[in-house]
Image (cartoon, rainbow, N blue to C red; front, side):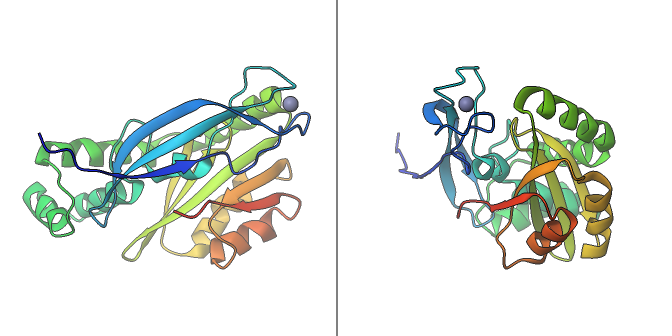
Length: 227
Ligand SMILES: [Zn+2]
């Protein structure tokens, strides 16, 4: 069997200080180590390095939001590939056509997987995000004493998908499809409160970063590590 070497990308937490005592976090173990296929057709091994606090010794594990947002938990296609599939399905494109279009980019996928993936994304779009977000506020305050989120924006043609994650657990809380930034703003204004102490998001030169900064002026802003 021919073994294809894959480029490896290793990510550590974007913030390396303990939220409780500010001590420098230390590497503990690799939380996930998986092969992910991107829209370019390229395949990378993505490693998410878990860190913990040597002083608190509380069993809390800190992860990389960047590694976390590249591919949904349990999936080996990038988030963007999955959202592209979902969008094509919404446009009622056939499975064959979707497979062909992806194949033209170098992304290999079976027609069965097209259905599984579009159903999964549909599930995320329709989930009870209000409950997820409220629960996340409560859990984060309990466990870490403060609230942090990770906000990503993924565009597919004319559609923008805004994805909200719990910074600590990496759990997907909301997947909003917005036709413009105004619509995204209404979600941010409603769900990002004064209690948010930190937001990890896209780089400062993008609109999303600037909007989030305005909506949560007290939150520390941090950007995802470069891919
Ligand atoms: Zn600590």
